[in-house]
Image (tube, rainbow, N blue to C red; front, side, top):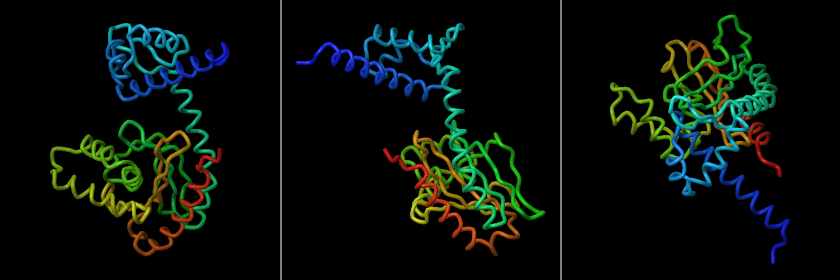
Length: 254
């Protein structure tokens, strides 16, 4: 039979698991959900969800919209996310620096957030003519090397959803199907490319990885297209070496 302390431990673990399930549901619904909607999504009694939400609100992990917009993720989770991002930036910075040293080109680190790539860090290239982006700048998934690398790393149904979400009226179903097919080649090669597709005059190669929290990131080397073809083999070799280092860095050793 379980002792009193064992019962309390199991009860505490159950509450944490239920709170995590609620947070995951809210992560997928940026506009917020009602108590009833959350209860239905996590398959728990409304009264149980209400108690857990109350505790999460007290800790600012979720907030209740006073205008009736529902319950949403709160600012405290944003602080945790920023701390996690800093850790990834800190751990990847030596790899970016080495990549730039070997290739002579700019190296970028980006994270996938809300269906787009957001730049977290950059080491500028050594040439006078070089590519430069700002930290915090947002780039699309389907026309960039880092975005395509992330799409190729995730399950196909998830990638399809993001691709269709970014699709414009000018992009046909045939083009979407072709892009999904291209992801298979990226998975095999471990590298993704953008050759004058996102920005005329700039080409890039990159790879994706997941941090210890499961977030998708990418490291890419954007290059003026006038140099890309000539240096492509060297850039690819350097990226594959960097990828091996990243895989080791972000492998859970517990």
